[in-house]
Length: 178
Image 1: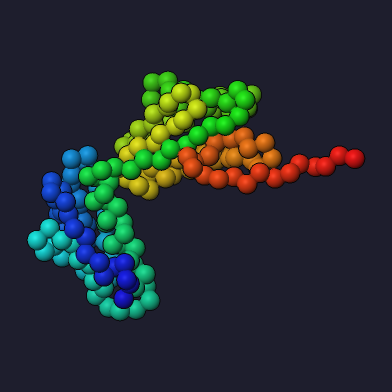
Image 2 (image 1 turned 90 degrees about the vertical axis):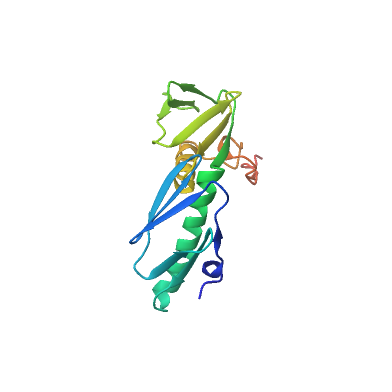
C-alpha cells in the first residue's frame, strides 16, 4: 500500500466533506471543490478525518491510492487557505500590467501578450514586474503560472525572461572572442 495513501486527511474546523457515490465534495470558506474518485478506492469519513483505502490491491489501485489522497488533501488546503504562485519578470523594458481582468505582458515581442485567467483564478501585479497567481485549485494555479512563464522562459545567457520567484537560473558564459 501507498505510504502517502495510508495517512488520513484531517479536516480543519469550518471544512465539510460530502461523499456521494464516487464524488467527494469539499466545502470551505474560500469555495467548493469536487473530485471524481476511482471505483478502486474506498473513502470513509470518521470524526472529521477522511481515510482512503484500495478495494483490491493491484498495481493500478496502489498508484491511485496515493494520488487520490494527495488530490483530496490539496482540495482541503485550497478551500481553507488557497494557493499562490509568484513570478518575476527580468529584462530591460520588460513589464506587465492588469487591464480589467486581463494580464498584459510587454516582454520584448513586437506585440503585447494578453492572458485571460480562467474562472476561479485571480492575477495580481506588483511594481510592474511581480505577478501573483492565486486560487483554490492547485492544478489551475500551477497551469496558469506555467502558461505565463512559457511566454518568455528565462534564458541562461542574459538571464532575461519570466521566472518563478526563487527559481535559480545558472548563468552560462557566452561565446568567447579572439
